[in-house]
Structures are given as C-alpha cells and as structure tokens.
Image 1: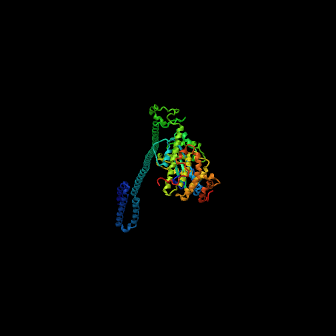
Image 2: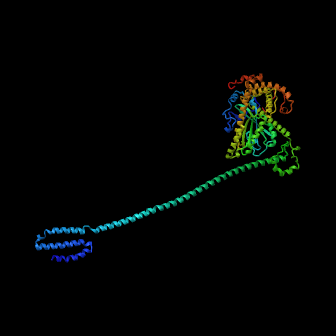
Length: 259
Length: 368
C-alpha cells in the first residue's frame, strides 16, 4: 500500500536510456548495473522506492531552465520570459525497473539578485543540471561558476552532473557543431554528461530527464546496497519492523544472487 | 683527156668541199659517180677485163671515204650534246627552284608556328588570368556568404535577445507597477539593465515610490520575507502534490470496488498520514523525527513490497492493516509530542487526529 497512485504509463523505465554523446557521458553501459537490476528483481531496493531524489537546475538567467522543466513535467511551452522568483519545484514520479522513484526538480532563479535565496536550496542535491544557452557562449562559460556554487553545498564525489545546452532549435547545424565542441570540452572537464535540448520543440527533453532519473536511481540503489554492506537490506528491515512483518518475510523472495 | 676532165673537176669541187663538212658525203658520192663513169669508159675502150681488177678496189676505197665523210655523224652528236646541255640546264633550274622552295617553305611554316604559339600562349595566359579571377571571386563570394550567415545569426540572436529584454522589461514594468518585490537585501541592488529602459517611467514611479534606495523597505519585501513566502509556497505545493496523490490513491481503491471496512480504512488513513509526513519532510528538506526513522523505513519497505502486485490482494490489505495498526499506536503517542510543534505538522493534519478507534460504521467514501 502506498499513497502514491500508480505511476503514469509514460514514466515507466524498463531499461536504461542511453546517453546523447559517448564522449561526455556519466557512463556508457548498455544496461543498469547488474547489482541494481538484481536488487530490483528481488525487491531489495530498500527505501529507494520512496526516496525522493533532489535534482537542482542551475544556469544563467533566461537560458530556459523553467521552460525545460515545464516542457517535461507539464508538456507546455511559454514563449514569454518570466523570471523565476527564488526557487520553484516540480515533482516527477517514475517507475524504474518496477520500483517507484521520484525526482524533485528544483528550478532555481538565474537572476543574480535571487542567487542568495536560490543557493540555500542547493543542499542535498543528488544531481545537478547546469543549463546553458546553445546560442550564447557566455552562458556556457558561466556554467563552471554555477557548478562551483552548487558544489559548495554538496558532496562533489557523489553528485551526478549534467551539462545541458538549451534552445537547440535556434541554432543552425553549423553553429551547433561549433558550440557542441566547446560544450563537450567543458563537460569532459567537469565530468558531466552532455545533452542538447529544445524545450520549444521538445527535442531530447524526455530522453534527457529519463536519463537523469535512471542514473539517479541507479546511483541511489548502489549507494543503498553499499550502505547496507554486509547486512542485507531485506534482513535488516525484517528484524527492525517487528512481528507485524512476519507475513512479509514469509512471502518475500529470498535473495539468490548478487551479494 | 682524163686529166682535163679531171683537172676542171677538182677546182669545181674544192669550193664545195670547203663550203662545209655537211656536203663532204655528197662530194664522195659525186666522186664515186665520176669514177664509175670513168671506169665504164675504160671498160668500153679496152674491154671489160681491163678495169675488172680495179673496180673492187675503187669501190672499197670509196666506201672508206664514204664512211669517213658520213660515218662519224657530227650532226647527231652535236644535237645530242645540245640536248644534254639543255636538259642539264633545266635540271639545274629545277634543282635551284626546289632548293629555294625547300629553303623558303620551312621558314614560312616556322613563322606560322611561331605566330600560332604566340596566340596560344596569349590565350593560355588569358585563361589563367580568368581562372585566377574566377577563383578570387568565388572566394570573395564565399567570404561574403559566410559574413551574411554570420550577420543573419547575429541578427537572429539580437532579435531574440531583444525579445527577451523586452519581455523582461515588460515583466519589470508590471512588477514595478504592482509594486511587487523590489528586493532590498544588502548588495543586491545591482538591478539589471532591464531597469534602465524603464527610466522614462521612473519619474512617475519615483513620486509615489521613492523606496528605490535599498535601505528603505517600507514597500518591498526583505529577503527573509521572500524566503518565508517561498517556504510557504513550497509547503503548499507539497501539500497539493500529496493530496492529489492521496486522492488518486483513494479513487483507485474505490474503483477496484473492494469494500473497505471502516476500521481498515481508518488504519489506512493513519498509515497514509505517516507516509505523507515523511514524504513532505523529504520534499521540503526539513529534518524528520529521527528516533524512529528506521522503524518508519520498515513500514515503507513493507508497504512497497506489497505494492508490487498491482491489484493488491486482500492479504496485503490485512497485512497493511496490522502494520499500520502497530504504527498508528506508535504514532498516537508520538503525535502527542510532535503535534505540539508548530508549522508543518499542525497545518498538515487537517484530518482528526483520532486513532484507529474511529467507528466501524464510517462509510468508506461519500460517493461509493
């Protein structure tokens, strides 16, 4: 029983979405980590199913952070610029490998004057999406500063980075190629996964967020498995959650593979 | 008589002989005629035998003479020599002509060739020049096209920026007009360029709203206030999200048309409330009650594994019932303490805090 209603059918991930460019990807494996797949099959994902992964979206003003989120979460696009005040967030629920998983997408203000407010929401992010405008080199140059600010509040070793070029529809293919070269370089430097999207046309938006969801989920489960270490998540839960769970232990499948 | 006849004879012949070699043969024939006549006379006078021995000798002598006079044929020799000479001259002339021709022919051809070469050279140079010209022009054209492309891009970009700036301006004006949120935090008044174009309107604004200097915060919101507003908005949004999900959940439960016993429903409600509290704390990043987080995680897991099969079988309902019963007891005690804290808990729990003792008869839902 879960108060969360079933996940929308178009938010179900049965396999790992692939990266956009192999040169700048967090990893290029074809499938989820075998341990993750195994854990999901055996319902040994611990609390991940109810974990809400915090994702923050940062970047220069008017690069299209809000539009990107709105395109994915609401499938809308507003041509008019409306500055985000401080922060905003959207919830997006997925089902990855049969396990419910939620992303909380924090949309931050790009305007300088809101930065001190927005930055208080950086803490505890599991993924950082740095957005820049594919038609504005300066916005790409500023991504490193955005990253530095966001990493002040987070653990650089565990957070997943995504570098996203927006407004792809506005750049010609020649211009895009040039920009992509620079962006790939930056992405490799900061060890981020590179994506290029258009919120206007919707190009790559869904693919991108699915990738974010999948990789965050994978990292979460792996961390969970690691944390439990020698003790098995299933076991520890059984011990802790008293006699009322005896029914469960009986019905639960025994883990058969993957330590 | 012979000498006489002979005597007058020779003087008449001599001039004839001297007159030319051409007549020498005729002289021999005259001589032969005269000798013949003389010999015939001798034969008649003295018998034919008298001159018989003489005739063949004379004939032979005359024949020699004839041969001497006629035989060498000086005429024909001369003619042939002349002819040869003519031929030689003709040949020589022809030779010379030919030689001249031979000599003059190649020269002409050479000149022609020279001329031809010059023409072709000139044409080749011209062609090369044209080629170079063409290449240069095409390069120029390419450069121009590139520039055009660049300009178009710049144009598009500028248009886009202009649109963005205009939109910003409009938004800023709106904001200004509605006197919303001119943030006044220290060091935050680096008001964007968007404010500059507003200057024409500034005079109007400055009179009723002289609070542009950041220290005066009569009309705008302070940073703390904005943060509070945001926090409140986040909480409300979280509540909306949770309530929507909860609604969807109960709707689904009702649609699966299992009649939910009231007691069970109440237990579910309690469990739901617990879940909601936890999700909410996660969403808002606020710390949750630490003491029994493990315990709660357990309930989460338990609930999650139940959820695996889509239409939850009755068994799972019973399980959840027991599970939440247990938890609701814990919560009941914990609620007493936690409920005193203001903020999220207070406003979250609109539902009565009654535990599972809610009467069994409560209808599962008003519309079922």
